[in-house]
Every structure is written in structure tokens, then in C-alpha cells.
Image (cartoon, rainbow, N blue to C red; front, side):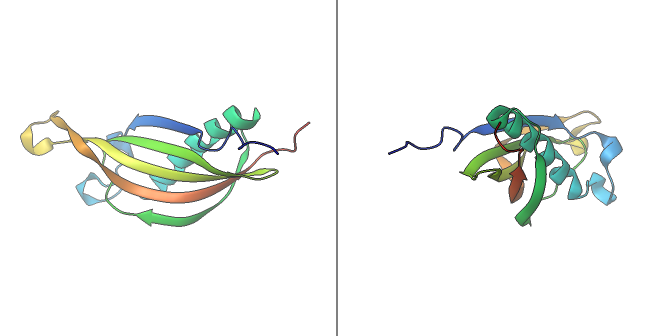
Length: 132
């Protein structure tokens, strides 16, 4: 009998400041694709850690845009390995706003959000080359 795959539950987290150059809509909102790009970055690190390869993103399921992401935010993006297949890995993905700019309080004012605001969640599938 074999034990649980040690890759299951592996979690990788990145934090990123959202620059004003990424604002796309009124109110300094960034588009939803911004979070999907960050999911690709964190998924790449997961593949490197689990399989020694950058892997490829095969698709998303159940993408949910729950709250806005704005320029001036600091976001935390997390991927957790939920399933390990022969060549595929299913990831639970989350993007949360942990800090937010507060221009109403001054040009460079900002605050830590406690608790963070979950902005986007998704399930993603990555594929890696066959084991050597």
C-alpha cells in the first residue's frame, strides 16, 4: 500500500503590488485577466517545485470574480495542489487583496485589510512532461 502523494497540499504564495499602470477602468480598477496572469505565475512555481519543470496551464474551471482589484492594492495569490494525476495537477487558486491604497486619506495613504478581501478564486489544471 502506498501513502498519500507528498505533492498533495503543497501551497505556493506570491505577493504583488498592483501598479497604477495596470489600471484599466474608472476607479483605478484592473481587469480580471490581471488575477489570471498572477495565477499562471504561482502555478509555474508549483510545477517547478513538484516536477522540476515550468509546466503548462491547460485550463481553468469555476473562475469567480468576487471583489474588485484596484491599482495601489497589494494582492496575495495562492495555489494549492488539490489533485495529482500522471501528468496533470489540479490547483485551487485564490487572489486576495491584503493592502489597499486610500487616496481619500492622502496621495500615498494605504491600509492593511484585516481580514483580506478574496477577489478571485478558480480551479486550474496544469500539465507537466512525463517523468523520466
